[in-house]
Amino acid sequence: MIAGYYVNNVYLVNSDTVLIRLHHSEKPDIRIVLSTIKGVWITKYELPKKSSGIATKLRKEIHRAKIKNIKNPSGERIAIIEFGETPNIRRVILEFFGGGNIIVTDEDGIIRTHLRSLRVKHRTIRIGQKYISPPQRGLDVKSIEIEDILKIKESDLEVSRWFGRNLALSKKYVEEVMDRSEIDSKIKGSELHDDDISVIFKNLKKVVDMVLIGDVEPTVVYNNDEPIDAAPFKLKSYQDSVSKVFKTFLDALDEVHAYEIRGEMNKESLEPLNRKIDEITKSIEKQSRIEKEYRQNSVSLREYAEKIQEKARMIPKTPENITKILLELGASSAMIMKGRLKVAVHGISLKTESNQSLMKIASLIFIEAKNLERKVESITKAQAKLENNLDSLKDKLNGKIIESESKDLQVRIEKMWYERYRWFKTSEGLLAIGGRDASTNTIILGRHTEDNDLVFHADLHGSPFFILKGKEPSKNSIKEVAQAVVLYSRAWKDGFSSASAYWIHPVQVKRNAPSGMYLPKGSFLIQGTKNQIKDLKIECAVGLVFQNGYWIVVSGPPEAIMFNSAAFVVFTPDKGKISDTAKKIKSALIDLLIEEADIIKKIPVDDFIRALPSGAGRITQRKRVQ
Image (cartoon, rainbow, N blue to C red; front, side, top):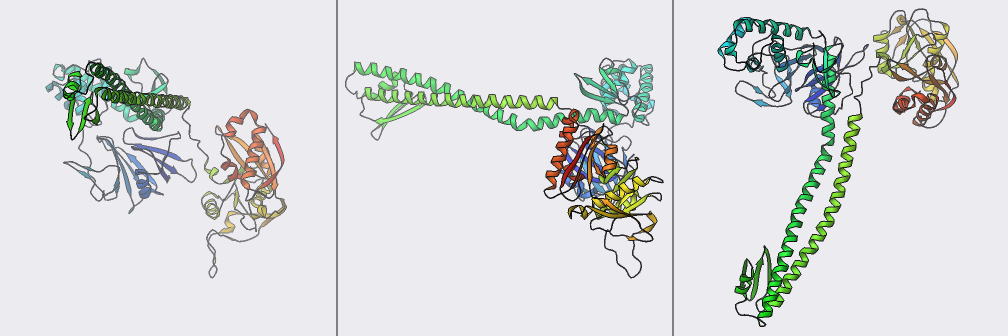
């Protein structure tokens, strides 16, 4: 399945997960997900992508390298993916234990980069160090014998825990073995009989065989419509749960893991809002404590001031022992230093002249109480504002949660290999593909041209090479491809109304110049007779074709496009911006296919720009066909 694919790009999905996009010259792209938590699988879903972290390091090591194989060493908790050829072999090693790791080594096993460094007793993960595999976790279930598990009788551990420690087998499969054996997994190993162990061993072999086969009956288990687990066969522990059978175990894994990743990314995207809500909540709580403290202190100060006033009425003159009186009335401290009276009441300190009357001191305390009350008012207003902000943020968070939960995972569109070039199907259904530049011209002529194809070109600046696939094409098909050659040349931008092109056989195209001649990069030498086709009208059509479950923007000669499209627009060269032309064409097609308007609106304008010739145009015709 992966033979012939090479690494086109590497992206970061999250801190422990990367996505590798694999490209093939004649097959749809494949996307492999590498997760130190979940494993390795091929995904059909559009996952969030970033270019940073370990993805950048991986891209540097394996970009453009062909993928060779993926293997899981027997009994190991690792997966190894090999890329490239000698002497540039790279092995990407995924470790699924101890927090997980992604490590890249060369053909000699020397570490070139890694996700996490490590230094433990038995090995070191550092750049430049030799990679050493982790110690084997337990018995290799692929080659286990009954004698290996008879040792369980010597243990006082629960059976499930003993298997978890001694077998390289995940917990759910251990539980499946016990369910099939109809033996309580909590029974101690020392309590098992030989017959019990024979039954366990028999079911262990069955479960392991089904796991190794992989596609016995690939199943996904759901809880409240959410996929929660996948297995290569139906597990007895899930027999009462809602489940669905998939075509392959990889498809089942993709269903579960992609859903989990989406949930993780949604949670991550909500983190800034949650953090802000948490900050505001803590601010409100803090201000509430301060407000309560100020209110209590204000009341206490007033009560204390009233006591002083009452005492002052009884002692009209300023007493000599004023500090003693203030202490008796409830001050926590009162002293005179350097002619200044300092009084502390409920943690609030006041200073005044030492010769002040009791009434004056009471007045000062009343003023401090009023200050606290004004602060309470300010805090109350600030709290109201914070609470309004908090309510708004919570509403925003709830809206985002509802929006994220309502969005389905987007299935990645698997485009046909020829969709990366210019392409269309002629009015008789033959495939024509053309280059977009010198590089793709070379690829088309070198990789995709067969002996029975026809090759098209024009003696015009910027003319692409097109090939028409299929035996004995009609004159109409030949004319349509010849027209494509001229309309995608500089003739469009220069405002030509017509031009000529020619077709030849593949054997007439030479990539190497004769001795004494020089061919620029991307150029070809044409030998023999050129079959000229003259007076080809410079006009283009853009249509929408429903193919492989999605709408595709296709452009080319009007006769071909109108024959194969659900709706199309014809236009001729004109002045202006190519982006404006693309927007007008998209709008016209939306109006023509009103039932599909919501879907067509989601097609990027760039897809229309990519389909157009080298300049702007004026629409001359629009029509719905189907």
